[in-house]
Image 1 (cartoon, one colour):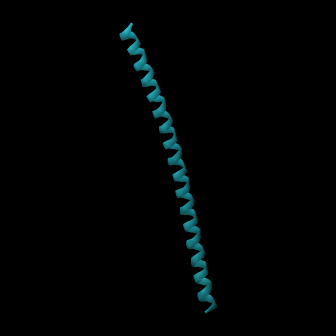
Image 2 (spheres, helix red, strand yellow; image 1 turned 90 degrees about the vertical axis):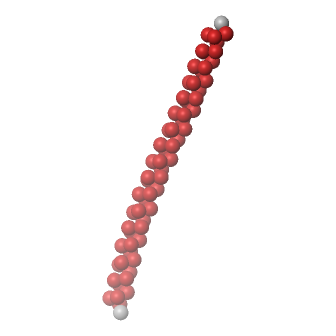
Image 3 (cartoon, helix red, strand yellow; image 1 turned 45 degrees about the vertical axis):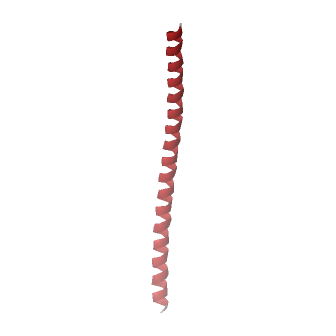
Length: 64
């Protein structure tokens, strides 16, 4: 009976290690995706500002 319990414990520990590793991998992937999304938002805002500046310049030339 002790051997059976030791085997079950060892199996549970191996499964826990695998689950912990998978969790860490997912957390790393999520952090990467979050940083990529933040960069896209920054770039989008920059492009919006640039487009507005270009629009204002063109509008000023049309008025002048």
